[in-house]
Image 1 (cartoon, rainbow, N blue to C red):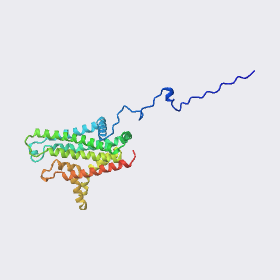
Image 2: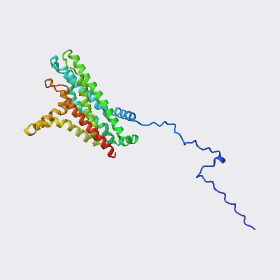
Image 3: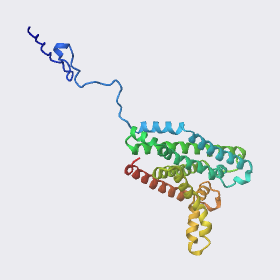
Image 4: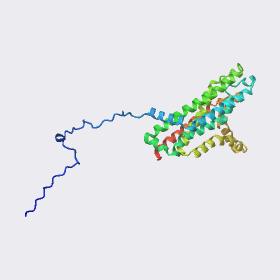
Length: 290
């Protein structure tokens, strides 16, 4: 009996390559490959501004700090204005009651300035931010612009409300222009907040940055009392007393009208310090990892 011959092995079809177009009716893709229906838009500063505006208005810390600031400036300002009479505005502007609220209110904007950037480092969300926008300088620029706009607008409204209320309570009691003090006072306090934001970007720690900024504001207001005891440090103490934050605001609001000080040198000094801190924040942003 003969043994049956096994059938010859059939060649296996390979799936490594697509089937031949002529045999299977397969069509070549169009030149250039797949085109996504989602439009590709080049990112720019406007997108970063929109992102930072969404962040700053959606977190509760912003609403709390802004609300406390307005309550301090407007509340204390109205209380002071209610205790004054027409003679008190003989040579001072109507906005002067807001000065007393700003002494405390500036701490709120300093704290908010730090939290705008340091809170993202604390939670780790800064990694997501820089992944979505690898241009780090663009993110930091958007933070500076959005925060300054929010802080300045809030200050102008708060100080302006106090000035309007005081002028209504004591009509024709003062001939001193007061709108200039509204904008200069708002600019000074807003720049303190921008300085705090720059410090927060450099330190990347909320508690450390807030403590550093409180030292910048409070230490120059306290140290002159000790420096002016000795003759060798008296001149330095007098200069520090002239340029600290409370004294600068007092000059801007012309609390001592007889001195003739307008607070312009103090404002220019703060602009210089803020510009230096902002430059340092940009330099460190590109050199360090997140």
